[in-house]
Length: 83
View 1: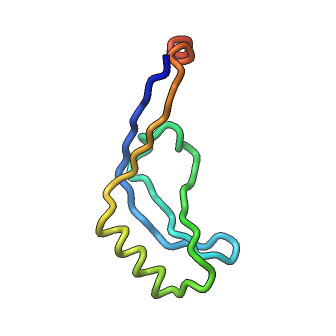
View 2: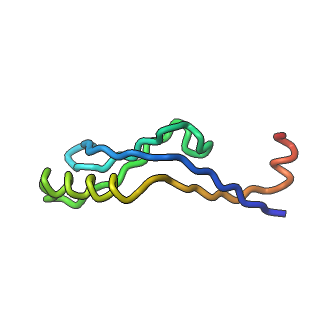
């Protein structure tokens, strides 16, 4: 029987670059979401987004988003074997 697991973490945001594209990087305050351990989550911005526009997006996210919620489905048999 499948069950769901909900994990949460507080987040902050920063502007970065990957290749030539600007990105909004998501930084978890604590390493509490198991499926994201070792992963970096970023939002790629449209080509042509100016630094001022990127900063405005960052400000809106920082003022309104307090956390990240990840829901995963797991097979009860796999959970029992692992646990």
